[in-house]
Image 1 (tube, helix red, strand yellow):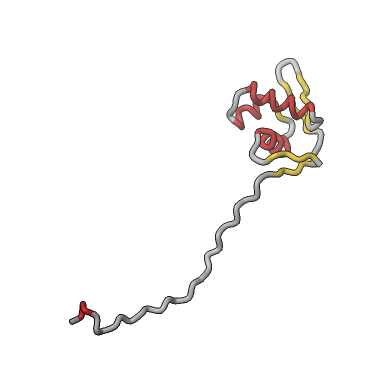
Image 2: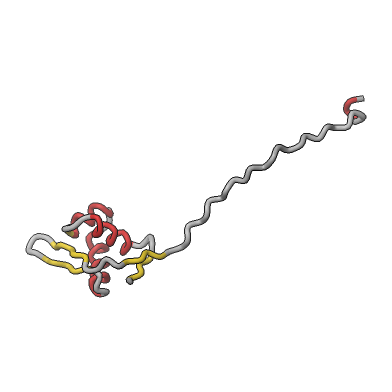
Length: 102
C-alpha cells in the first residue's frame, strides 16, 4: 500500500487520475490551475515511484495510473465540539433589603 500525504499536489493528481481516464498533462494543468512545469515535476516523481506511467505522443502526453492501492494520510481532522445541553439556570432572587431598593 502506497501512503500519500493529504493536501499535497501528489494527492490532487492521483485523485484526478482515479476519476478521469485517459487524461493529458494539459487537462490536469487546467483543472489544478498550476504551471506545466510543476505538474511535470510531480508526475516525474510519481513515475519514479512506480505509481503512474507517462505516455508521450507527438502532440500530447497521456498519463496512465499503474496502481490503485493508495492510502491518504494526514493530520486528523479536529473533532467538532459537541454542544452540551446545559439545564436551565436558576435565577437568583435578589434580597429585597438591598440598598438599591430603599
